[in-house]
Image (cartoon, rainbow, N blue to C red; front, side):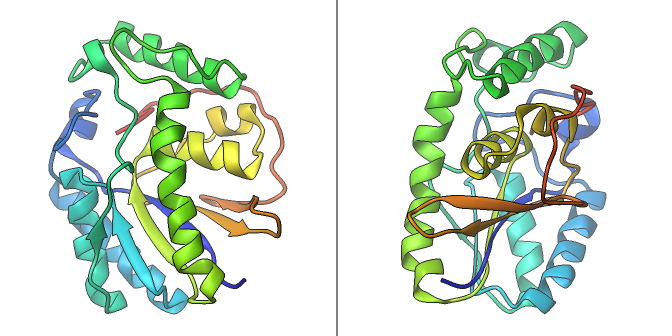
Amino acid sequence: MSGRLILARHGQTFANVERRLDTALPGAELTDLGVAQAKTLGTKLVERAPSLIVSSYAIRARQTAQHAEDPIGLHADAREGLHEVQVGELENRSDEESHKLFMKVYESWHAGDLRSRVPGGESAVDVLDRFVPVLDALRGDYLEQGSGDIVVVSHGAAIRLVAARLGKVPGGFAIGNHLANTDTVELVPVAGGGWECVRWAKFEAPFHDTARAGSDDPMG
């Protein structure tokens, strides 16, 4: 097999600026800065010459993919199952208490409790059950065919959860190392159906368990 799976967080949105827990589809649009970030992402990806770019159905992810596609020379496509962790009753909340509640649950996922959830929201099991099969299909249809890198534009909390679980990244590292807008995580398929995480934003493998620093912008 050749090629990597590049998981990219979308550009900045109006909900990010307002610190709203924005998870339900279709969600907020990109700010002007978010558009610029998306175009820069596309420029950076040119040298990788990816064979495919897909996104979640959230407006912010689709806009990011669309602005990134021009430099790459690809047409972006949206796929079901790649949207953000759903926060149920906390949707659109921006208060500190809501953020702390979500982070408490999110940290518990990275500590191994995959069934906890905020009221009305998804568990980690729910997220993995809808997200991972999409990646498995992309792997079989593209990476295992030697087509080169593929790019998936998705969301901060979902990417960190999925990448940590698939790539066996320590939970403390995943919690302590937030993904900024348009940061990427790279996974390489390995024999037997597994994955290896080789890059997490600016960090390269190996990844070590770190103090749980939390995040100023946990999701979106």
